[in-house]
Image (cartoon, rainbow, N blue to C red):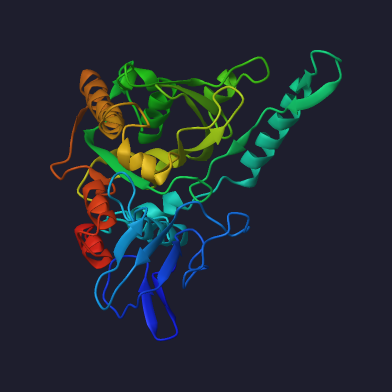
Length: 381
């Protein structure tokens, strides 16, 4: 996106600004730059033509007067500022993420599944390849197209959306619970949680179950002692699939035991509404006891501008609040399970960490109310 340019001694700008203007028409194409100036009417047959063009009739110095069209969309957002921010996000997907605590999330955000997981996905693709649907012409009966089941990982960097969400919800365990009069180890507690996932969360928001259809059944793998590569079906307003992309369980209680899932596109659920990674784990607390946590870094699939109009696209109205409620219900469920079974746990006094774009600040930037520097300050950067 070009913010301005020159034609001879004349300055011209893509948005209201100062400079010297003469009485020429200036055509502005926000998609391709400045291909048309000085009374040149855009050619609709030009391959660089963008239908969203505008012209100004200017006289003397000062701010251009809009002649035809508008510099803003129906929401009052400047096209130039939208393009500018989208370019920033292509360079840095965390550009609109609040800076405080951000570094602790980047390792998870940048994580990619290992080769064994990729190999399993490729093997499943081979199984699905036998289920290609052939579309035939209803009159001739000849094949006209093929529908091939899609199966691939949705990584953070490959996502079509622009907004990165980071969250962390911990529980402080001061005494581990007992099962059949035997106190669980941290590893056993994490595995018990994994195999009984839905008993710990609010099932009215979402439920988790092993992926199963006519081709793949991951019940046995998910419930085994090593679920690496198991796929899970998430039942929610917009269903999705994740795959266990990392599984780290050690007999040493001093380590961070955890498992990680990565979002996927699958024949059963199609595209997952977000792209990224989420981990559940248990690790020692430096002040004693253990920390059980869920931590996620994902990128919302919805387009940037649509997201500003409907931030609830993930789970419906108030969608981000509903996602937070799901993981807070896990905190409550874990505390209840531990206390009901002879242990002790509580939430930390420090608040949960949620790094989420300040949409009001972004709207102010789009509307020209604040500068980009002021936007970054509002994000704590």
